[in-house]
Image (cartoon, rainbow, N blue to C red; front, side, top):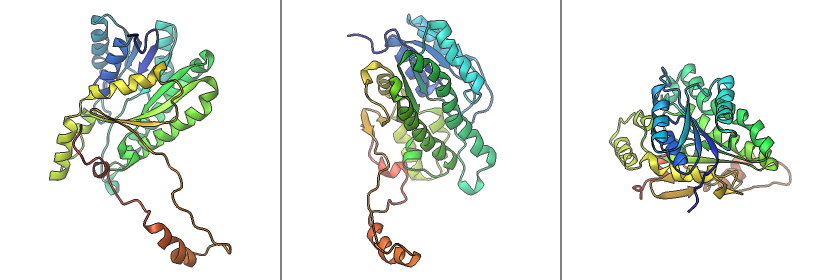
Length: 304
């Protein structure tokens, strides 16, 4: 059986630990040369270390693969350009960008600080833009390329204490769709993955109630390695023609998520007033309103 990424060059951000590490390892096993990017900071985004990225590179090379480390921050546009250029200069091209890097600064909304907000947005949204923008000239010139951006059910559905993360991760969906639309003429694909897996980010989520503790225990059964096959598939030519989609991976389950479309409509030939909206539209629409649910309410069964 041929390897899914034979001859390809892939950049994986946040690849020093957790999900990113597993993606980098599988990408290398499937034939890719891998740029292993990781700042080596904490789950909150503090500090830096070269060791996580270098350790993954050593592991890939020990298995006979090709890899090179980059330890810069995706929040710096010039650093993003350098990490993409590193792949081109080291391996001759760049074929896929996997935007996986992330941090958490969970806090209930009325206690969330401006720094909590901007720090998370800078990594998950601005950072993903920076790396994607840096790769686009190469993708355009070679008339091919694939983006895989990591979103979350925190943004797709909702969670307590994650206004910054929710906004960023739903923003990633918009970014991915925009890239898919704008770059389709150059044979460039862009998709999202919403992962369900135990990681140090998930481990930092507060567990103040018994229900929250039970949910975290369920998540522990979902290993990071389970996310890698879907991600590698989307990065490879096996997913040719698949673009603008939102996928999920949860242990041995795969999901395709819906995207926003109108579900009800109402019309009055004489137009609307606040009063007629309350009298006419509200009763007609109310049964279709979405309840105020969290990710755990939707994915309430044990991982399969």
